[in-house]
Amino acid sequence: MAQKVTKVLVANRGEIAVRIMRTCREMGIRTVAVYSEADRAALHVRMADEAYPIGPAPSAQSYLLPERIIDACKKSGADAVHPGYGFLSEKPAFAQACKDAGLNFIGPDASAMIAMGSKPAAREKMIAAGVPVVPGVSAGTADELAAAADEVGYPVMLKAANGGGGKGMRLVERREDLRDSYERARSEAKSAFNDDTVYLEKAVVRPRHVEIQVLADQHGNAVHLFERDCSIQRRHQKVVEETPTPAATATPELIAKMGEVAVRAAKAVNYHSAGTVEFLLSQTGEFYFLEMNTRLQVEHPITELITGVDIVYEMIRVARGEKLGFTQNDIKRKGHAIECRIYAEDPATGFLPSPGRIECLRVPAGPGVRDDSGTYEGAEVSSYYDPIISKLCVWAPDRARALAKMKRALTEYVVTGIHTNIPFHLRLLEHPEYARGEFDTGFIDRHRDALLAPAIALDADAMTIGAALAQAYRDDDAARAAHSTSISGGANGTMSAWRLGTLARLR
Image (cartoon, rainbow, N blue to C red; front, side):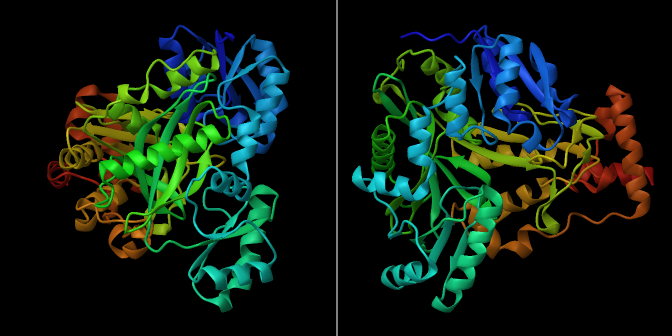
């Protein structure tokens, strides 16, 4: 049965709201933005056809209130809601509230979210569906988890049952550390998710984090769009993703098998829309179900680059009740794509956020470069939300050329007024092990000294010159080309020899 999608309210902010609106505009669908007091001048507000305030800056008083979102739908006449990622995107109660209000929720049914939202319950469903899972126990007391750890063997991983993003997660390498880690994991899970349930899994030593993108319609058809390698993480949160994975064990046969298992997992919960099935890939080629993200994933652009599939477009088609327009055999991938998440944060201080005003901004461009951003020059990076500035993606025929293209793009990226993690990305791409594709989820921790060193130190005179150049860069297009710099405000420290020479001549 066809369902209306003629005006979409995007229940989100930042780069993902902008990205969704772009596809809606291409489809001739009007868009509605919602915004907190901190986001009154945000890019997603400016891009939408209509925009409605929903409360104060804290997300708990604005973006996380379903009633505010639904009220904005009623005021605007929106007939559909796209939740993006984060905020309410994986809240079954919100999906159901939209349905009860007569709105088309562009995502899976609440029942599928519930089935996959509880990780212990999802484990049991995956076991029943024949999907390989990491040995462990769904939940229990400290004594019960200790007994399970003795059975599967150390090291083990404690995880929050109803959460993600690295919250409530603890690696335990010795039996004597289990109880303390258990209490810490419970406390963090309670604080982050209001649920202190913890479960235990056997820790896979130096695994890769490899996920499979799936698409499914409401007629029983489901396909996968190949894999993404998300192993470069800090505090269990992804920083860099690429596809295909450069893992030596990831043969075409293995990826095909992982894809088949991911589709099976989606069908096991009657899933429709876009979703991602995440796996741990061992050094010897075994893979284990980790979780399913029942939403659009942050790193979806690199899958779009290698397949040519607009995932947001397909989500809207599925929400309308249409069938997938292709089968698994129709989907081909070409080349290699990499995504670097550009954050307003300082790697040298442990990736602490760096909120503030973006004084000067110039994003890279050229063949094979895509920058999904939700900000602009003069915008404020708020301390209330995730400090992501953009997702810088590149595509090239092979990995070597993709790495070269990403390095070039990063050196073109100019941001002043705040710190960014651009120096970290450049150091990572230059690291010989990463360049060879030899990495896992512990890569950043093992190479902290090399990757997280402070940016280039500059004296006061150079900083003054940098500030002056930034001003000239804003005022004059010609000055932009001649004097662009990334040192004002202590930001990137990623200057070419030409830029350094310019500074030297001015001094």
